[in-house]
Image 1 (tube, rainbow, N blue to C red):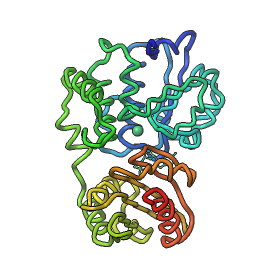
Image 2: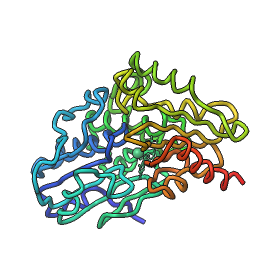
Image 3: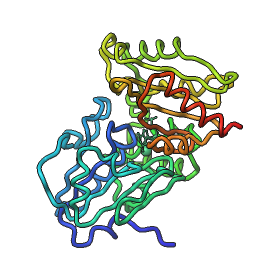
Image 4: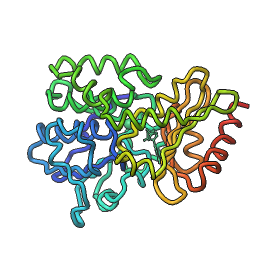
Length: 318
Ligand code: 5GP
Ligand code: MN
């Protein structure tokens, strides 16, 4: 089967709206900025607007990141709206009306839980990242330095710098081709993935110190409460990497990380190592994700939330 290219979706298109998921992460920003930059450079007659919630400062080295529109910009009808790295329409947040009002819609994603909510859906659950999917839609010769920086950023974030099980030979080949564009890959990896601020290290340390092993050491959970957000003066953007550190605790199959988002309401991140399909659990509770990494929101006390999730984990572990 011939793989479609982005050019196949641009016939008679003069205006494009683009968006990614709420609380944009590295792959969301990388895939959006990569495609945005490619369209700007290769299709200068098309007007493109990119909508995302405010992105972490560490991603602002990307060219044109200052052009991202952070809030709803009045009603508009785009010829085409492209959704990236979003498994369902709700993930577009406040920008969903631009999707609904567009003449044509295209969804580019890699979540196994994707609901194929657009007119055209390019969803590759085996791809490491939405950024990897974007790369396959582009003309390789036209991928320039700025596009390459963005897509490389997305790939390293969703693959944990090429170590999660979603990394494939194809991922490495694409990363190699992006490196050939002369990108500062060491800086991208260090500055956006590994470097932590002092308070980020503090909250990581605190979350690990207060983590709880259960189910014979097969599961682990930790929670960051609203009071800790205030005490350390942090936001949810400062919590990256905590669930990953929990996951690699020796003997653990499933890691659960919660942070308080409102009165008796938690954002849940799940990770598994070899057995548990956390995407199925997240989908069951109204969220989504991948087999080894997924998330959702849940109401209740910490005790209720952990109990509900454990029940589903135990069902799978038998
Ligand atoms: P994280 O735990 O890092 O927030 O998310 C892990 C994966 O699950 C990501 O691919 C993310 O897109 C997905 N995910 C996290 N939270 C939600 C959610 O509330 N709804 C859906 N549909 N997916 C989520
Ligand atoms: Mn992604």
